[in-house]
Image (cartoon, rainbow, N blue to C red; front, top):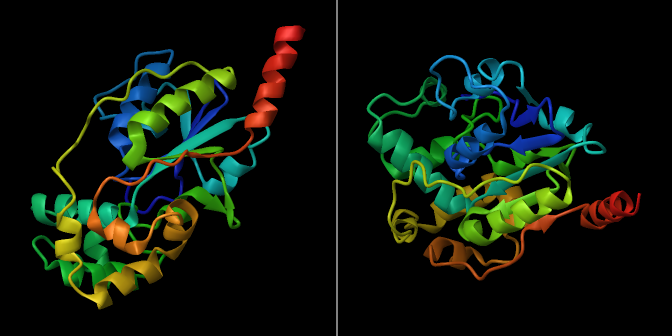
Length: 258
């Protein structure tokens, strides 16, 4: 995955795009999408790997940039999920810096290393050159926007995954797409979110994250206060971000009446 700018999985045989965002149930969503493939995948590469979707699906999928994905907005349905930026960066720190002895190469090139202090991790991530930043800590807006335009027609929140996944399944049915199954629980490592407030112990750390992830906060979590996001408590349930629902309903009615 590293620093690849190709953030969307494009299916060849169905008009579907998925904007993959690391540390946002990405492994679980990919496992579910794998069931939409017509042929059995080749090789032994895990579905979590970008390489799997690029090379191991018998040509049924490819990876494209947000700009390429947006050009398909008239013919394809696209979706993604996002996560509280404070929670996401803590998850990346726990997994990639504390749990893994040898951090991924793109993170090494950023100056990150195993076991480093959280404060130092945040400072490096928030001051990193956007061209060098690893996708596990890259702002979600950078992966889902093209020319300041949101690419996916459906953006759910990880905090409301059960409800938003159900809504996604309904939307895909409305779009005439294959129905996705239940989402499996993969790579769930943390219990609770009380560590967010503990780790973000200073205004300086909080301000650095707000500056780096401003678009994520404004576009996807603008209805929640910074204090609420830092507390790590369940968020008030809001609907997913959706576009094109009216058009999809008109198309469905036209097909029924044809």
